[in-house]
Figure 1 (cartoon, rainbow, N blue to C red):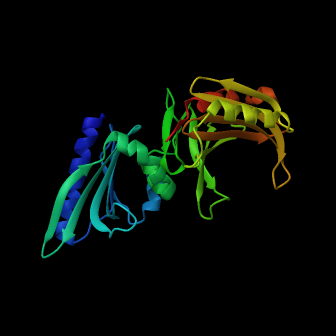
Figure 2: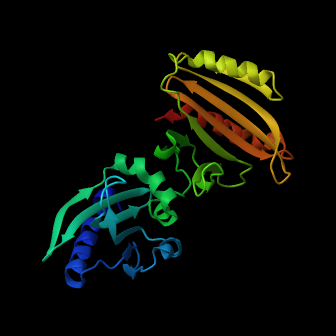
Length: 299
């Protein structure tokens, strides 16, 4: 199934949801799955948390998920009623939203289709807010051939990861209840990647990334850090090093780190693994992380 076919399926699902709203006064959350070699399955999903297990079990060629939601454009605005339909086939995802008002009769607005670029820019934030939505939007799947770009708006960067790497999250110790993105290789992973974006002070002087990188290089060389190197380019510079640290639980870790300086600010990337792992075992992962660092985009 291609994207055009998927758009037709989403349009049909939206019409079914509208009819359901007009007849029942509410939208029944509905998951519709199609297959190339067996009948279509229509499954009511009163609890959306069961969707991931259904999709994993049935493995449809394509699916649509329709649900009634509340929407608002910003924190201070009142919520509005809407129908949302998400469709998926392979790595392709489309999303349509239809706002409505319940007056003497139900009045529908126009269907709004989220563009591919807008959807791509919002997938990570949507998934971090809701794990189930992350599954529906295919956020947790390994990157396909050619890699995948993740737009992490809340953290101010865009990151590319190579084929076979996936995204996950962990609790952010600096923000109670917050989530911190991580990436690792599927299949015999030895460590994970973490990224932190640093912004410049609005009152700071004219940015000089090369000078900043050279200062950090000197500081690292005066510290216990090992193999400190600097890579200079006309628009940015990367400082890299590694060092041994101890986790709070007592585990000894080896951390490889990169600080990338540019006019927009700095991004810090780290890859950590247990000290007992031999360097030869992580060579491929470190090469991938080095490529990741060079392709990070600051937002």
